[in-house]
Length: 229
Length: 81
Image 1 (tube, rainbow over the protein chains, first blue to last red):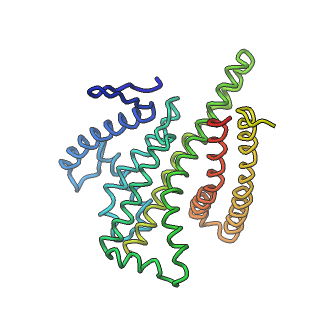
Image 2: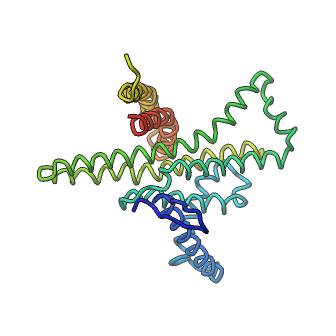
Image 3: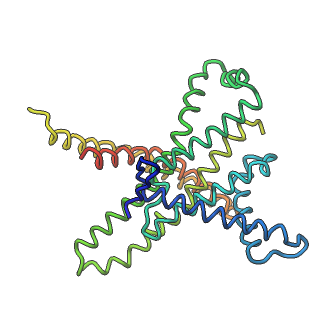
């Protein structure tokens, strides 16, 4: 499936396969979180958690261990945003295991995530210090470091989105090329199906988890810098 | 010499090859990081879990510029070549 052709009124939009998968994933995560939230409210705090409550407690602990080292006091305040995004990005990065197009291998998706982090970081800075305080903060260690600080602030969304995009796109292209090669040499190359699980293990499982961990570590580090924790 | 589409195609593929020279940096840098991690484990074998996670974090961060050059190569190959 290359994509969906959506007709609204008299205009037609072409929605690419990776964006359709992202939307379906977000819908599934929303419904699962609403259902799990109602179960968590009825759970008993004095007994050990079981079932759904246990799964989400493990996920919350993983999210806290990622961002808690940077945002010490403000972890609970920012945990809903970071935890939900972490779940969405991890699940979408693992879509390469099913042979579908990975949503984060589309620059629109990663660019949007990068922009989201920038609005969060600069918005927190402006809300706490005001615009004048923010500009004054760029002269902070020494006055001649002002261009370096500006360049660092401009490079942050680029580096966050391009790192995720490049890793996912490169992984899917390399495995795709290997499958094309296997198909071209078909009767003799059945033996190479022994090798492909290892490629998937590195590019789709390890790289996916590692890249989300790094994305949120860097985002929480800059957020802690701008909110003076 | 006329500059038609074959010229552009050839130059794009040449540029894609040249831009992968940027893969040299992360290779050297990650090797240095791994060697420092091995030294640290040798000095303090109990902290191997912490050393391993910090090493992997540092490696994935310094891989970034190699990924930038890979993205430029892929764009040149698939859009112009």
